[in-house]
Each structure stands twice: as structure tokens, then as C-alpha cells.
Image (cartoon, rainbow, N blue to C red):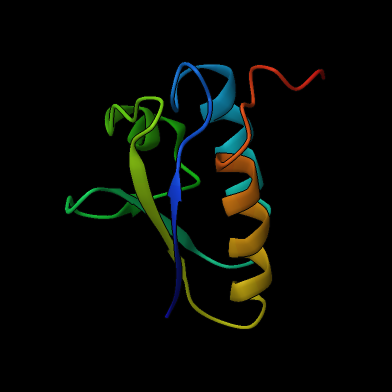
Length: 91
């Protein structure tokens, strides 16, 4: 199973707009992706409710994981998103 550990850059953490953008990208990744905060249990990264329930704040470290063909590429894209302040990115 491929995984990446990332520090969340969005000023509001994974709440509202950043969570929506991240979960949409996770759902479109083509592989099942999970996300965990710290040592907590992983949740489905495509579920906005589960991601928001993690209460990830700016500067928190999360681990994203995926398995299957294309997992590394999907995780690279998602890790890049998490390392970017998604509220600062213009739509």
C-alpha cells in the first residue's frame, strides 16, 4: 500500500472549500484513498463528512494511502493539494 505523509497548508485546515476540493479529487483518483490524522484510524478520503469529522487544522500532519494501479500517481496529486493553501487558489 502506497502512502504519503503531508502537512496541511490550508489556513482553515480541511474544512469547507479545501475539504470539498480534496474529497472530489480523491473520488476521481481511480483508486480507493484513505486519510488519517496523526495516529487516528483512516477514513474514506472521498467522503466529505468523514474528512471534515477528522477536524484537521492548518499545520496538522495527515497520512493518505491508496492501493492498486495508479496509487502512487494519485497520492502524489493529492499530497500536492494538501500541501497547498486551497483557499488561496483561485477557482
